[in-house]
Image (cartoon, rainbow, N blue to C red; front, side, top):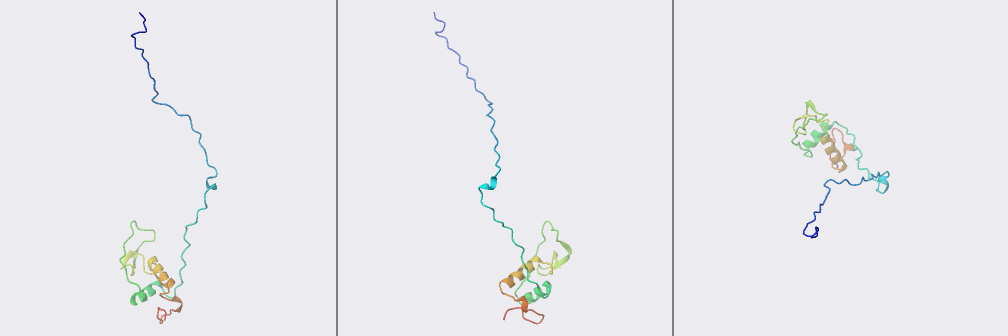
Length: 134
């Protein structure tokens, strides 16, 4: 009788559960910006403010009396910024503590926007003149 007959040959299948891949070369891009368009500079130029002939506080009061500026509800920044001053109050921000009316950047920008939009003419202002263009 042939020994190979009736005998099942065992075949072992070996699989690797952890195969290491061949090391990949790391390519360094030396001229990364070579194919890119130059980036535009998005930094805003500092806003130029028109010099006022009276204090910002006085001008605010005049604009408020004329109905051109109205106080708004102020709120404290959280956390308090480096410009916070505990002893100062702003009339435009309904007396909020932290800055005074003279140093209020919001009023400064509002007044400048009014000048830019020809709502007021600072050059013609004196203490007795009307702030509106004739």
